Image 1 (cartoon, helix red, strand yellow):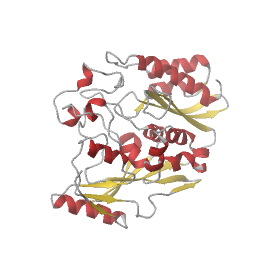
Image 2 (cartoon, rainbow, N blue to C red):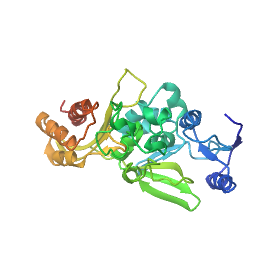
Image 3 (cartoon, rainbow, N blue to C red):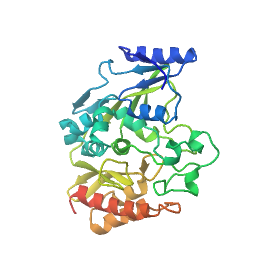
Length: 330
């Protein structure tokens, strides 16, 4: 790896300016919080080696969590481990705390940030191992006829990657809003609109421009009667990406569901919200039969590839079980 400059801005505006100035000079500059995914991508030659790294750690407030009755603000540099262990998050937003706890290894949780986890690149083996695939500028997705056990059953085409983030699914389920900063100032993007399907943009997985940063996340105030959970199935005992996962929130009045949000992970190039399954639960008393109906509805329209049809059965069972657990009727 070639030598690079390490730049440490003191403000967000300075960070954006440094990134813009480097690129205007024809240099390669990347922002870094935890930097774990960036380091891997440089080593795997997914991105060009940088001339400079803009280290965001000195910028005040980006590593803080502010919980209040009116809502919660999470800085983009809050580590995944901090998020998983924060008492305010665990009390008000258990689905997010559980999703953060499910991320990777202890080392990754301690260094990786929430912004980095949300914005990480796909872990498709063709993409990561140097194949000239669509995501790397090639002309085909090798998973279509290759090893596609871990690939998408929803939203695929022309690429069939799956989004790797655990926390992204929980943030969509919580109706989070993302704070984005760039040379034109700041903008807010609902989590449900942040992620991008391959058919809309093959080169990126979210709406960030090349010179923009995800710097914060806002969560609405938690509500009495609303509970949630994150459930994840892996292909080994721990510390890997989801084969399938479910981020679920239910707003309960006794045993009646007033509102629901169900987001599937490990099955699509973006966090995959299944609104039709949510509609099955609205205004209904939760029973085993209703939970099964919601699970069946959640997997309608799945289009598995040759080797990943097992995900349909697995996700269906996970939705059913999660609905019963969160509603307290398991």
